[in-house]
Image (tube, rainbow, N blue to C red):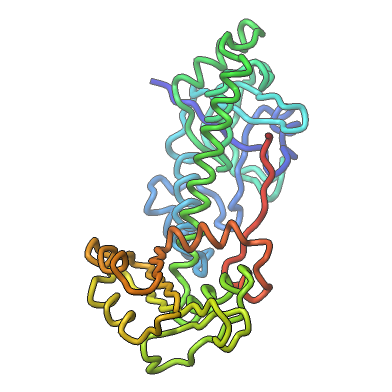
Length: 330
């Protein structure tokens, strides 16, 4: 059974016209030379590691996967698409031959497959589900059968999908948005988790400053059960006086840790216990029966609070968790 592929025409579709005019698709990673004799994934992986030894393992694996697919998995007769974002159209065709290296089209994208183009399809004619699946940012990826069928329908009929109603489009957009939000939250948690203990302490102190408090951070060493003191005056004389413990560990904190923290508190204190490893059920029970107000904060809640107050964070705190703003259709 023939496969179907999407091959990006470089950033902003700059190679779309050459792809169309020359009857081909092409990808980069030109530094490793010809792929002609690299007939296995392992052979390509060795070349990638030699060319880019400083790349992270994930980046190397991505390059290996796409080069292997282009050289060894794509076959004559497979469907192939490329996209022109300026005109919002997909060029549809089929692979017409074997791999070759050809620097005449573009020296940075010399890995070439010949293509017999069949025609163009406007993105507006495709179903919302197809548009979603074609939104991946990879240079090369495989298409689902449902997407291929929808593209074939649009190419033949030149009519929009019957499900292209406002409600259908809104539902897909909302699903994508929620997926992006969930991934963004997990990536932010990954970044926070990679901080060392001192940076984590500074991150929590920065959040408290964004909420209007002045903070004193304990130096490394014995802290008698507190890492940060936050208060309106910065000295802890004015109420509320919030005493903060920060534990940057993988294991969940238990009831004994909560009891130890509470043991050194004054009656007027408020407590905040931050644990990136979470808390046991008994720890929550201990916090509920504490003699002072005590809030337990997991990494989920910490990152959510940082995002909610990001515009108010000082520059030092933002440098610990740098975030980019994106805009989404309302």
